Length: 472
Image (cartoon, one colour):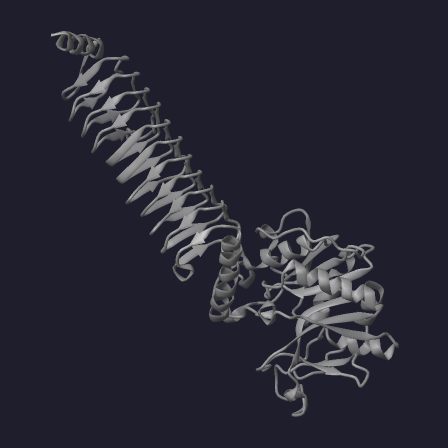
């Protein structure tokens, strides 16, 4: 996802990501944490941040349906909370996966903008303090709905008071603006012991993780706060409106990262770039361009306006205008568009051109070859320096099977030619306008007519005739 590795000067923590919530407010058959955020599932953002922060283990706490199982790779520990009894119970489900970690970081999977820097900084602050727990906090202008952080006279944290339901917090506590971000650092042994004492003594009837803080204080372990400077880091996703708000912040950060690295984004507000996209220096991204998945763009390229690319490769100095590209490779110096459609398996070699209203699928287009306009090229290999005339069609499907077409180097395919696969047109061969080619055309031959008749040696004869004309 483009996050960086962060070197910790403390022992590597175990990071527990709470992800067992039902997500009912999303009004979706898709689990909340599997909704896409800038090209990645929401849960992937927290996992990537934990890894980049140097976590020894990443533990994701899922619900009993194990909805996230297919999204998690083998390096992620997968714990299951059998019943939705609250955040403290969710952390209990992860205890068996913590191993011998001395420090445990707990964060919420639906707060995806917490980055590796914040996780690493919290871990460092916690281990320096010697406290039993460290809570990450922010101060908000409007803290409505968040747990309030109640400080003791000595500045340590006395408790966190929830405010989700009437009766959880007093009127005075509701005026506190410092709130719980949902991210904590714990001494592992103290956490495990305190979890056993948590009770559901609140209006919601849930086992709240912040109650661990009060329990630790009763055992004479200090609890301190680490205040985050970035309030956006705690933006939570509970519904689609909040998902859109988080996406706006995430997209802005992605744009800023690319622009600071030397990419020109002409109009960021009219540009979509997924988290994993890579773009080289001095490339220009024009308005109404969308770059998705693992797309890679080289240096000095020009993409857009109105270009959409999914998992594509765009080479150095290439130009892609008004095009739709999916799982295709565009080489250095290639020109694509406007109004071109490149489908999976397409390879455009260096210096080739694909022009207006051209569709190419599962084909290898040679270096310097031109497919200027109004053509369909499917399941085809074309050599270097060929020219494909307007309206050319490769008829690659016989009603049951797909077949390949091969066009040699420096071949010239006349306008409105139909190449009926399987068929091969040799090097430097020609087809006349309107030809329907059903048999192989040898190198240097001409195919013309319907069905096409082949004149072997036509190119050589034409060359000699031209030389005779020159001598005259």
